[in-house]
Image (cartoon, rainbow, N blue to C red; front, top):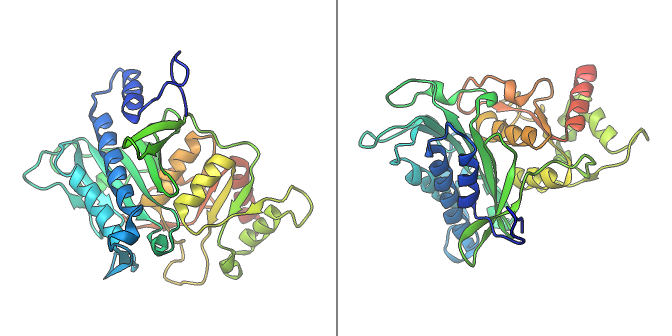
Length: 342
């Protein structure tokens, strides 16, 4: 367990940590602090269901499709509703956007509006739920762009450089919350015996010596020449580098989290297998931007293969993108191969 201050072995709760972070920001009002508390509570509630999924009849799909054309899992719907209901009435948000909804989620008329917008994927990797594979929740927080009234689409379509905070929960053998407000990346592990997130991974930095590369090589025949050559380079086929081990769970949050702590690269390139998705599969707003923000603040880098993810101007709530994310040198090498070979 991480320690803080001069007392050996001192336990640091997420509440204490966020308050300490707030105290070093003279302009802080406490609104963001409370918003992060609400998200931590949402994570606890979702975790309580993911760990009991087989016991309470919430495995499997609902028979519905979301805006992405994907089957909506029962836990997807529960997670989406939980995050919404904990944040719709607080007066901290001007609007919300969820990967499960085709349009902006407005704040109900009977509640006050605030200065932030919340963008979230309530349960990323939910197709893995039935197989007891780790899944996660991803969130981004921005200052609203509009001055007053209810939030608009403009408030959500901001570059990643404008982020105020971002983070994710991983629901696995333990539940972890990893987040950043631009002052380091910090990880908290949920202690189920007391129902509290405790600081376990302060100031996370991606290790300089990477261990893994993570990609679904089942699609390799659909990749561009540059991506194929890059993969061969990672495998050390030209003898120029140490071989990286392939680790691919198929759950973005689990793959990213492992590489964040161990070093490496995750990538999901554009491919030709689905003509309806020529620009990649992962969602720019809900997945790529918040993870890119965390990667950069942990010393890493994220790109679409040609430019930094954080510099891309979103044009729609459900825009998709290729993603290369992890150790900076590995991502920059991918860009070099793509620039040379396409």
